[in-house]
Length: 447
Image 1 (tube, rainbow, N blue to C red):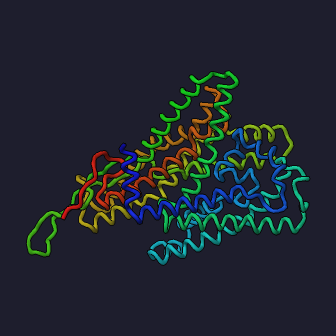
Image 2 (tube, helix red, strand yellow):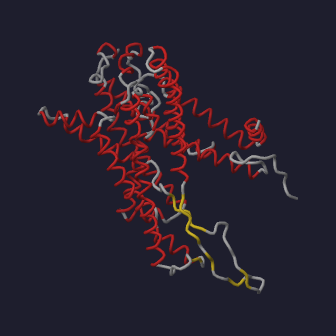
Image 3 (cartoon, rainbow, N blue to C red):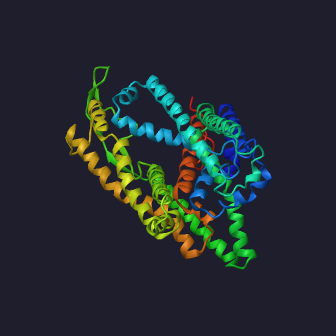
């Protein structure tokens, strides 16, 4: 009843209703484009090629982030990942390049210029990835008969143009969802692509357990219970904060008398996982390198490295993966949480942390607290990231379904869902309705 009541409340708010309808419409366009095969490729001959990504692996990860477009040789085969890569590069460059640092301080105008730089860099990354993807199709199992026009220069030029355009169009869809829809558009596109693979992978796991008598319904029930527990733990990781108490000094009010002026929050919330899923994305990008380099050599040690780092459910892959996640969590937190700026802003607003001197001492205190809470946060993040390997080895879960038990896929779904619910929640509260996370009846407007 509460769910139905919330839906009615959402429908009553015209602006929110229009935003949700627009978001769903743009997502439908994106999912439709993921099924449109590149001109010059016979879609009927891609069955064997697409089947290679159903059992997880590195290809399975790429296919999951594009919602199956990678395996479909679709016009959206590159997905939105080139834009994500460009955003990461620009964000890291802001640390070392003074020009970007200056733009960052210019407010809205600077943000627009940074976005423009990100878009141009996205095109550059697409121009590298698109021909690499097309050249790799035969090696991945696409038969030569599938190329209707042959692998001619015309095919490459037209296909590269379409792939680059598809990525830019997907980026445009994401920005429109952010501006005129609900939630963060880019993140929602990634989440929808991941969720699109969920029904198929679960159906395959169900068939394996029930139809093939490999554990039966009891194993399906156990897997679902474990999955929900991991989701709850991921929600805790995303939302957990350490609250640093803050007090404000007395100020003279305009009325000529003194009173304490308190802010809306009397604490500084420091997130347990301030870096989000970025450490996992960084670590996965690095983990692709050893296998790629080792493939250039035919020696025994190179083949061993390639085998170990190509198996995303293997011991050595996950050991190195977890170590890199911990390292990148500290690195990304250090560059994205400006403790010095936080201390300066607190000092200028007349606030202070009880028992800590304003200024440098406050910055050092915040930095020390961030280091202390980042350690358990990084360990927790690493465990969630490598948990799919545990369920594969211990429970014998199929690799495609195991990807939803942790890693980037699960954290993106949880993070985007929470962010979207919070935005819907703010609309409801502003219109004097109960939020999604609170029970009770509609609140009446106060006259």
